[in-house]
Amino acid sequence: MTNLGSFDVIVIGAGHAGIEAAVASAKRGCKTALMTISLDHIGNMPCNPSIGGSAKGHLVREIDALGGVMGEAGDACCIQMRMLNLSKGVSVHSPRAQADRALYHLYTKKIVETTDNLHVIQAEATDILTDENKTVTGVVNSFGGVYECKAVVICAGTFLRGTVYIGKKSRESGPDACLPAAYLSDSLESSGIKLRRFKTGTPCRVHRRSIDYTKLKAQYGDPNPQPFSFTAKRGSVRNDAICYIANTNARTHDVIRKNLSESPLYSGMIHGIGPRYCPSIEDKVIRFASREQHQIFVEPTGTDSEEMYLQGFSTSLPEFVQSEMLRTVSGFENIEIMRSAYAIEYDCINPTALLHTLAFRDFHGLYSAGQFNGTSGYEEAAAQGLIAGINASAYVLNEKQLELSRKSSYIGTLIDDLVTKGTDDPYRMMTARSEYRLSLRHGNADERLTPIGCEYRLIGAARKQAFEAKLQHIYEAIDIIHRTSVLPDEINAYLNEKGTSPITQKTKLDALLRRPQIQFSEIRQILGTDFALNEIEAEEVANRIRYEMYIERQNQQNRHLEELSRIRLPLDLDYTTVHGLSSEAIEKLSRIKPEQLAQAASVSGVSPADISILMTWLKAGGYSGE
Image 1 (tube, rainbow, N blue to C red):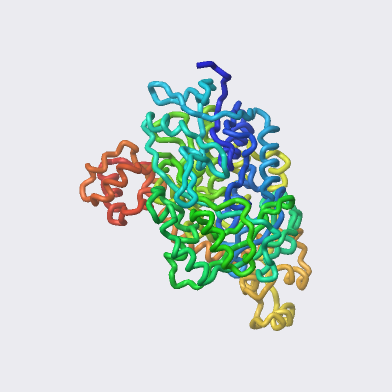
Image 2 (tube, rainbow, N blue to C red):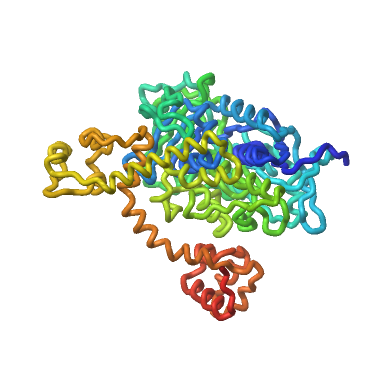
């Protein structure tokens, strides 16, 4: 085999996980290679061309706060921006952008091409070389060329032995008619890495001109929208695209039911496990039989494209059925399908094989991220890619590995869920997954994570200085609010106007700001207090004041978990020797090998009684675990 060069870190795959991993590694000073089957599919969006959404928007903000790529790219390629869940509490408000798909590819391709220390290589990785100690030494391409390296990050997406299904027809393929990765799976399995099959799918794309928009409900972007990146100004993103909502009906459902035998999912052709929270339209019709309709979100794929994406209408039914059922939808009577919907089956791992650093437990210098780890979604992939890239470079540089806690971020929650609990279907981030969600608002992601981005040299000096100034403004304003009291004659006219009860005595300003009817911007004008805050800083101040009591209550409830997180478990602990543990706890703890007692407590099937037994065993054995 021919030696084609030497690198510190090689990242396999140039999707959303691979981009973040490669850029992070290179920015931290490692000579990095980004290997991809095709340069023309870097940053591709084979499914919905959107960034963010419920909980996913939090991930994008956290990626940006750490110094990652996705937030910047999402803003640059945005054609419509909306804040979701505004009717609910601020902790679940999540930004979402409809993106220009072609522009996103070009923008991210330019980033990886112009990042210092980063070398982009079009080649299919077929083998990862390790020595007798299972230490990574290199990567082999499909023509037998060898690239030496010290660490590898696998970001293979849905490419590994990818198989696409439309009806009862299938062929080996990656997503979006790309070539599949046909050989790397064999290499991984021969190294002892167990693989399994997951499945996902994507709806068809239809021609813009074939839709009757007068029969659909229009969806517009927000006025003065909040960008993803903390470096961007409010209202700076493009926001003029219009999305629409259509609905299925009884006729649509009848077409689906009579053609279920044509579905590869229901006929048994597909064995991979599909996403629970993003089911196909045939799944929806069968699982929710009482529902009279299901929403279809009609979204543009870009400003220079006539393709419209039908979110919520994923299917693997044959093309003639796709056309028949779409034409039953009001507004779609003359629909023209440009790209047929399909399902794709692919190889991935059980993420319990990983540490919280996203390193494989049984290897040295081998990391993985994204859908290869059993997740779904661009945002989940990018978040993992960033952490894996940081840690692969830290491994090479002999620096401290980064492990984010559940308390710190949604990224920490995502990774902890994966490596501790595993996942039986493609994992999707949701706000309900975090017990710390009141503290993990998208608006304070920079306060939580930008110091870490600085520590790992992903945040430059100018941005660090601006961040520190922002925090100072916020802290000073909160201090003033806590110290300021108002008298009835100063504020009661305003309170009456807002429909909230007047005060009868001197009252702290923070108590008034917790009333839902009170707006911080209006209070500032009435009192004439100069807080020196811009719009975004003022919003964060108001949110902190309103939520601080709830957050303290949440913190009290979670202090027990923090105590458990300080108690470490030996990785070589033989759980069969711990008398009293349930058989399920022994089986799962032996397989997952949690590093801390808090992680053990979150493993499905491990009861509070099992945790008490473990604590007693640790104390009796003289193992403090600190």
